[in-house]
Image (cartoon, rainbow, N blue to C red):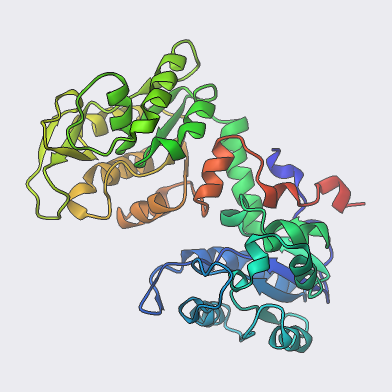
Length: 401
């Protein structure tokens, strides 16, 4: 997927036009309050660019997983309020998605105004990519802009369906995601070091297999490393192991021989008898996990070796934490590797989701070259898969005709 082949808002005229803008504003909430507004702030450049060009902006977004039903706890009021605050302008929030309130809101917009539809996932037609629902959404706009990279791997009505009904281009954030992720996959500075963490190999096997032919070093971290050690016949105590993926791990280890990348497993780990913030810990060799103990973090020797690879890297790609970072006692490995990545002179790209929060907590987010806003979308991009929400956008040559 050529990163810069898709048309963007710079390739079309939006003056006086109604722009249906899909953003990923699915921010973490607690007790009705936003706990991290990074995704809203990431949407600002596109919204401000459209406003400056006198577009009438209609934001389409979701929150949570209401599964096609109205859920008052997932209404977008807090999101619209925060966006209004950041813009310094009123964002008019409709009380429905495609009903009378939505139509009234759209009709009330003037050039440079911003409105927002209610949670698009309240509608059952959204995740079903229902053609009629897509048609109702498309009727609100003259142009469709997809800026929601985090949902681009979903073929939903608001990400893929409407793109076939309106002139469809990428927003600034979407374009930046495709440029950065595409760049590190297609034309990276070498050597390329990839760090793939997380708990389950089942969600990362495609990424690992794809990277083995495209990078120079692949470090496997997190609990999924236990599945690899089980494949090697080692004892893993009570650590999380995906038993049904042991054979998959064995095949990956065998296939790694002779491929471009050197596949590396942790040397040591932090282990506990139970997952609790105050649980006693010990550092052991990964091949010497005691019975009744489980791995919860990367050990210091593993971190040191990853850091050494990062210091000599031209490009670093990192997706997934190396331990249970949500518990501070088990977050040292992820934090220390984050600092090593931040200190390197490499081009650095970090996958979104949990890892973005972990890097933020480590205090080095501003020293990372690019932090993706995607979770599943980033993983699927790194697997080399086509993202429906991107594929449906116009190619640049077509948009300029």
